[in-house]
Length: 341
Ligand code: ADP
Image (cartoon, rainbow, N blue to C red; front, side):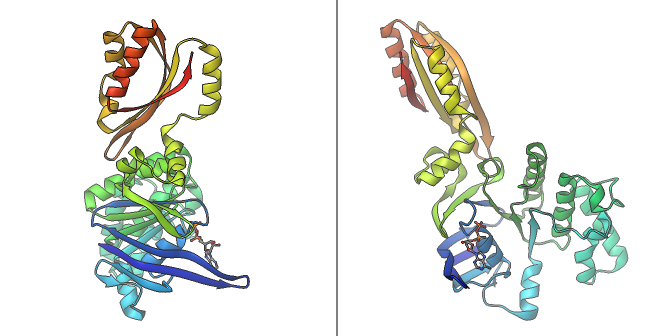
């Protein structure tokens, strides 16, 4: 569906040249939710803007839904852009228009007749769950509702690809989740290909099938989300994965735990995929004469399985603790001893 080949983007500024995107290659399949994660300045916006022709690459080719976006101009580019819609961090709504009028706007531009427009807008309002708010103005809506308008407007002309530029970064965590769920629902219902850029691993783990990690204009790691969670290779990827696999304030927690449990072992278990579903702790206690305290944990779901971290304290006779540790090592779980009392 989307193919980016040997793409480079160089900006010339007063202070010289900036290589914003540096020889990027990637393929995105139809119906996939593909996430690009990176810190500020990594080149994410430049990359996503090249997908709808808002920026042209300095080198290389970008093809979306059969159109070489990096080459076509004028009417052809406008047509190609019909297939590709975008939603934004700050929604970009028309403030003097109601919800209904905002959503109708791209249909007006496309020359859709007014009665047809009305039907289509009604459909879209239902799809994004904005029934009852049709006549409200953007200033009367919550952040989540504004983004729903943005999504409805983006879907008006039945695009094949939806680009999301930090679409949930201005929203609180709960609203973020409801918008992410809406995107998953739209992806499943309409088979729409979604490309998103973000600096939050939470967004990637919650909805993406594939992830690319960007640093200094390059893609430094890429693959199915669960694989990247399981085996992050680059240190930047490890940092992103930690954002969601480790409970908040882990360091403080561990220090506190070590004071509290001078004896026995404090162990960090990392679960990925199937392992998180297994009754591992139950088996640990049943099969060994040890006491086990669950100290802290965080296990959550990705689109292709679960992952998470659990801190436990194991105490008992040395032999039994050793056997218990052997048992843990034999399981499909990462084991790291934090303290050896
Ligand atoms: P991200 O979206 O990951 O924050 P950007 O694509 O916005 O990254 O920026 C990548 C790099 O390109 C940064 O160093 C940024 O300063 C530079 N850059 C982005 N847009 C321009 C521009 N129009 N002119 C000059 N430099 C730019």
